[in-house]
Image 1 (tube, helix red, strand yellow):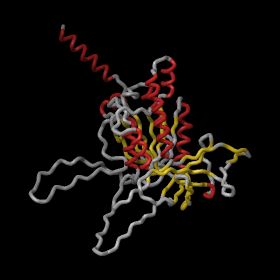
Image 2: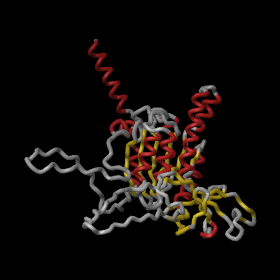
Image 3: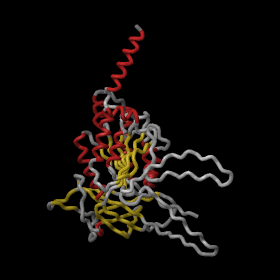
Amino acid sequence: MNIRSLVTCLAAAAIYFTSLPSPFLYAWQEGPEAPSSETVAKPRKQQQPPPSGDEQPSQPQAEQPKQDDNQQKIPSEFKKHPKPDQEAGVPTFRADATTVTVPVAVLDKKGRFIPNIPETYFRVREDGVPQQIASFAKGEAPMTVCLLIEFSGLFQAYWSYGWGETLTAAYGFVNTLKPDDNIAVVAFDLRPTILSDFTTNRAKTQEALSRLRIPGFHESNLFDALTDMADRMSNIEGRKAILVIASGRDTFSKITYDTARKKLQSAGVPVYSISILQVARELADAYGMMGPIQELDFLQADNAMRTFARETGGQAFFPRFEGELPGVFQQLSNSLRNQYTLAYHPTNVARDGKYRKIKVDLVNPATGEPLKVMENGKPIKYQIIAKAGYSAPRAVE
């Protein structure tokens, strides 16, 4: 009798697991915690060969990922050319000139990019001192975006509301990309996990997103993950940005909020963010399910998302409904693709490592007053999106 009961239980368990949906089984086998083979912007360090001398037994080497010859190279591989040896007595020179590049987007109240603004209408000030614009460019170019997704057991439990909202925003943004756009997918909980490196292959991107099913940890270390990705992307040239899809809560990061701000300001990578759980928070508050401490935590999270975006020249979005996402993606596209690029040589040449504030305005060159943008004969409101400042370089002896 006991053997028959045991066999019946085993058969029922087998039927249950075979009837589970395929995404669950796939996530159970793969999961977002699978080790990645490439970093987002910095190549993996190659192992050093063993020292010459006695022959040592060979160590097993990890199989390196094969690169597709037809795949366009991404700007995440950097090679430093060796410097020629200097002969004794030959004088050396050091360039003290510093060029500050400021990407600028001018949007109307509906988030649409305002084109065809001449260079003479832009005014750049550094710590309140006007600067002479050395170069000016405008146009549309492909994007290089790191999609940084919060995926922890805190708010993204399997089949939860936050899980669905996170995946809806991630898949929706990927579907708006153009063929020449490079995108990397990174999920974070206790630590960031690179699911796919920068690529124009949408099949690899979809494969990376399909691994977001079962979160591995309950922590959400936003500050660590965001600053890590910004540091990795700091040497990438061209139009680049980080898009964060998260609640904004940070639970266990090694660095503080102030340290994260300073690192993001120094990296110079614009941060755009899409906040989740806006409706869930309002419903929980309406039904008395959210205490004052939890409400304060979410308000601080929203403030952090706004601050990171404002100080790096990005934007923060707080959609409450899924129907707002297409408008958010349109504004992201306008801001990232259509930009004015200003460059200047700062009058303050001190190499002290201090933070310097940047202010970009549109002015009438004849009067110096704020510029009025007209549409259909009426002035319209507009906003200027640019980074708030940068950290001056330090002198290297």
